[in-house]
Length: 134
Image (tube, rainbow, N blue to C red; front, side, top):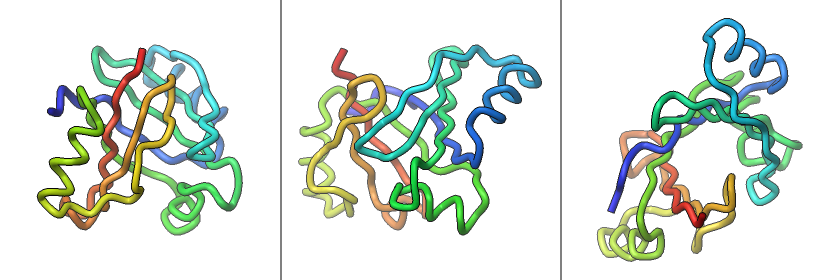
């Protein structure tokens, strides 16, 4: 079951420059950076109540977000929903024949499990499901 929106992810070219903007201009509370090896990105997280803004910078040309950055020059990449049990949610989605971008969840930020749903399944919006393990 989906609990809430966890974060909105934005692809950026230079995460350090964007961190300054989000802190100094928007005044958002900065929670820190993390490299997510499975996704080949560096992330920066900002808190807005129960919601987070996650900046994503690709760590190389083979990063899943590198192509997005090349084609679009950055911008909103996906919306992430927190779920109680990602494996149970995947069973439900498969039963409904929703296209899932990976066979099984991978490691995400803060030791979470994540999986992405194909954008064509939801009006061209890339959706990430997140199960927090901590």
